[in-house]
Image (cartoon, rainbow, N blue to C red; front, side, top):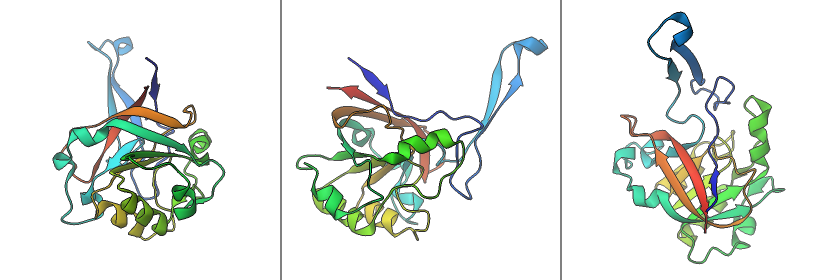
Length: 207
């Protein structure tokens, strides 16, 4: 059974969304300096790298991370290849066989942006009408291969349209090595006091 890691590596070169704290990893104890062990300090935001958005992220009284059932983050998921499109709207989504799909991962040209080493504002995003289409299709979790599912110029409406309907948003995926099709998704966010979101390790298992 092949396991595909679709998480991005957290290091000092990992891009961060504008305004979010930068990822910083540094050693604080080292065996070379005579310390008893190697220990590192990791500084990051709740939305660094591969991460999950809880409704609380954009809705003041939305469900917090601690209320999200892990069962929503594990199970069959479709990887849809939308490479080549510049924005994801109803036309792109209605062309997909979404019947019976509850977890949808959107593979775009964004996956190549991780190699840039800096934030790229021109990433492919989901349009507002595309978000409405996902709501109508009964999607419960949607993922995309960059730091935000919404355009950098967005006002938060795409997030709110999804989160208000209880659709979880999994951002910061790397789907460059994944072929389109059905997989089993396993996504486990950090259990922390941050209720707006959390970094996660996400993998796909071939069915």
